Image (tube, rainbow, N blue to C red; front, side):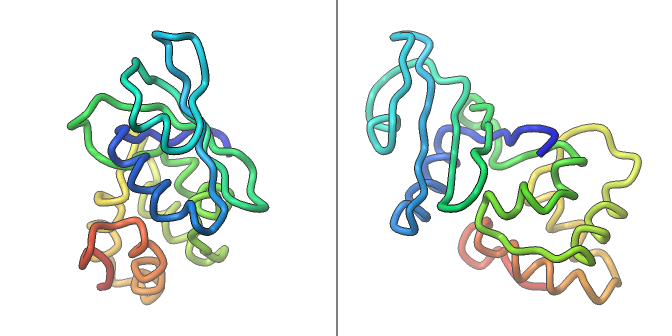
Length: 148
């Protein structure tokens, strides 16, 4: 993965809680105490959090930049959005044809993209692969957020 994900602490907690029973782990670095907190402790203890590491079983660890509260949900740079490792680390299985579509939708873009922005681009696309990608991404969206 070339970049890192960006999540608010709330979005990171939501992602972790939804996947912990599948063996996912999270570590969050607290600058206040100069220490790493693991699992649910990271979300209960007060601190100054700016980075985290999220890992699913059999996947490479994903670096996460923790955004201030209210800063939106999951976002990533366009190059990371077009890589299989990014999505696999988030528990989303996409194929090469799906990544090609994402790459073409984000071509020329330099700023980070949120899953919600990507979803809007997919919904506006007339490419038949868009529905497949939307279905796969539905696990990352709020209830009712998936589907074409």
